[in-house]
Amino acid sequence: MLYWLMRKDDPLLAVDIDEDGAIRKISQEAREVDLLPLAYRYDRQAGLKKWWNERSIPLRQGRVKEMLEEKGLVSPSEYLLHNLGLSLTDYYWIKPIHSNLTWNDVNLFDNDFKENLLIRMNSSSDGSFTPNSTLQGELEKSWQIRNGKRILIKGNSDQYSVECLNEVFACKLHRLQGFKNFTTYRLLKMKNKSYQYCCYSELFTSQETELVSAWSILTSEKNGSDTSDFERLISFCKKNGADADLIRHDFDYMIMTDYILSNRDRHMNNIGVLRSAEDLNILSLAPLYDTGKSMFAGQILPMRYVDLINGDIRSFSKKEKKQLDLVTDKSLVDISKLPDVSELSKLYQKDPALPPERIEQVCNAYERKVEAFVEWQSR
Image (cartoon, rainbow, N blue to C red; front, side, top):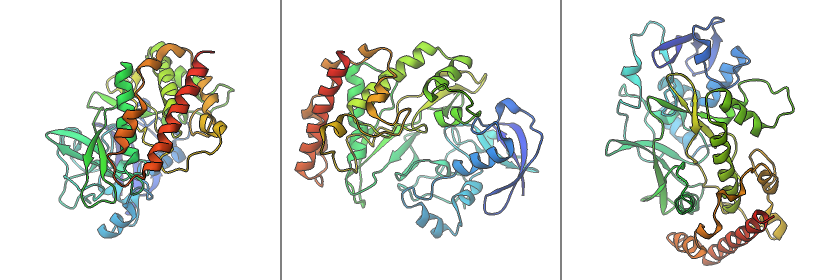
């Protein structure tokens, strides 16, 4: 079937999508080249197909596979197709060529969507759409509307609540530091789940401001230079209207607090920028989000001190200390205003399933990381 790839009410190009949700063919001509998705823009045909595939909810997320089977859907891309590719982070969607649908009819910033139990997502059988078909990551999660606000509820990857507790602890750290550009997470007690708590955050995008991942920016053109991904990202932001000093300031803070929290999963989809819908200018780094994989969540704590203070990470660098070399202003983190280890212990004790010895080990690791950071900061 033929669809328009749309950005709000602007048709960008025609795409032929089969009933399983896979793009078969893309028109050669684009009406608004500057409005096309950034990711893989250097190769329109193969790139748009890859962008569309990556837009689908991952099959490994939560119980997505079971949900698809329950709904009689063969793949995440079919689920994406049923929901017109709609998201709550940007303005892209698909419209049947001969349809009279408008952005006002379908956008999920203004139109209601189903209230769902965590990860039990609807298949749009009632004519409404869900933003859950474009959710990324491996943790089970779901967009919901509570008291008129759009919130994202996130679960955990095992029977413990540590990933959600880590999000809350990171928020505590940011507040004490006086840093404002972060996503606030709050705990929510769960029923009929293997873990005690999930967490939720409010939507930080809008009809005026969208989220663009660092991955989309870095894959927008082929990298034929020796410039690091870190500098390429800052350069892109500067060329597109952002205050480069402010971007670097927030990156410095992010890198240092990630080190203290042992966040080893700051990959390029866990970093984003906010972009203006009107002129496509980059406004700022997106509020820091997805810090749940901190504190060795789901991992055995390193036995060796060297591995504790300089572990492997998924980010701009492959090692924690190498990542610290990117920092320009060490003074942005005030050691005297870090949360006390007793606060971490108290927070972890909210989960009765967590063994006391594990809580003690994590608390000791946090103290040692702080000590290692102080030593680095003083050099």
